[in-house]
Length: 543
Image (cartoon, rainbow, N blue to C red; front, side):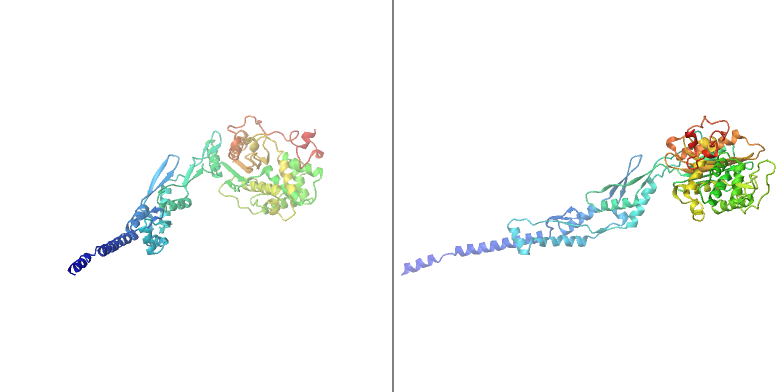
């Protein structure tokens, strides 16, 4: 019995299995606690794959992540301004434009991305199994700055580096105007967009600023005006002098820009007034001109035949030339020639001519200059240029003169006929002598002992048509044609070169006759039957 009891006591020895189990459970519990601690610390880091504003912040603490992206976006950006000299690097620190990053909402969204991996225990299980949570998500940048500060910065850059086009220059020998050096300027609006994108990029911290090429200095008519004045001074002809006066009116028919050098000074109109006479004749006519009337028109405009002009004014006045004179002057005034009129017939020097005059209308020419104009027949460079521009617009667009007069009083066809007839005015001097011989010019000239004038429309082959009206006066008893006429021709050449640089006349023409070509037998049709107002030179082809 004793041995049996001893045997039972030995069998009840130390509980190894229980102890081992307890130790395993304790170890497992400890490991679990450890892993929970490690996992909890890991949970305080941003998941792998998360980027904020393009910056990888996976496995970083909140503090480190914020520091990383704020540091990246605090770096200055490099702006490159490129001009003809080269590249100019310009640094812009974000705080110069009030750059501010809103880190709180960005961080909150980054932390919230961890929830996409499931609940806490699911994420813990993945951790225990060695499965790393990867959340491929980019949190967009939330930042702002002061637009006006950036614009002010860019305007300062533009003020330092922009270079406007150079001023146009001219050559008194060739009578050409040349554009200045090309210019360039920062495109502020486009630069604002480009710099904004660079400020908001973590890895592209440089930008090439958009610089616009402004091209060469614009050749406006002011450059031509300066050339003409300097040319006259160089020739010793003072355009605004006491004993010499020059008036030049030039109108760009494409743009409406004009030169007006003393365009309101009154001059003796001489034969230039015959253009308004023909306008008034057509205004009174309600049918096609007869062959005899067409002959009077051609003879008046081409040969400046005074008797033909007087007869036309007599027809206008219903047999009374003084009524015709009043009608012509009233129409000139009505269409914009406020300083132009004719109040007496052209003097013919023949026995029996009815002399006399009507009262001149009120005018307001430039009183600072006195060219001793004919008291019965006056105009200005601008008035005559304006009349030609109105006829041009009427002929080509059915506007201009057709609108300046009551509807239907003058037709587009009649305006075309005026320009057609005056295009045959081939005296080969004055305005015509300053352009190539093959170029069409519809013009009317006139001169007396102290005054020379010419005005018309030049049809440039390149389409840049223009009106030019030039009057010169020199106090003298006998006009020096060898002095004044070349001045008109060179002014005409300067205008031609401006509007037609591709066909510039670099030197004065050497093929001009010593004086004006005689009209009869050269460019006046030989008889009334040969006059075609729609094709004035047809008689030359048919002979």
